[in-house]
Length: 132
Image (cartoon, rainbow, N blue to C red):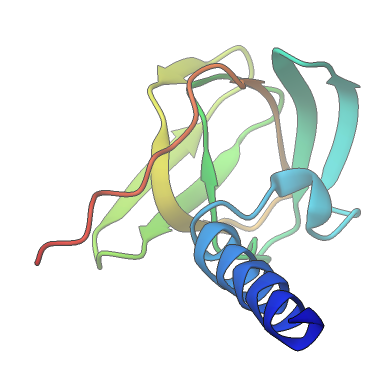
């Protein structure tokens, strides 16, 4: 009986780690040189994101968020589904979005870029249901 329970618990743990983390890598757990967490509460997280020229984030998602440009530069968001979005970042530029699907953000410019990101935890990214 104890072996069955241990097997079940380890199976649930492996499923949880491989399924949920693949879709929602938390930005604050990525390279600490990229992210400076300013505030992390039960309802929001505010982070200063810094990317050097050519630097990329790991694959991640976001809950609904607000972003504010702190520097000038170019970045490209590479979505897991193969689409890309180029952004010309400017100081004072404001952006807001609903939950963001899996992506990698790359500094495609020649200068260091910085922006403030405020994520709303009550509106997380939810992976689409698997089709049967």
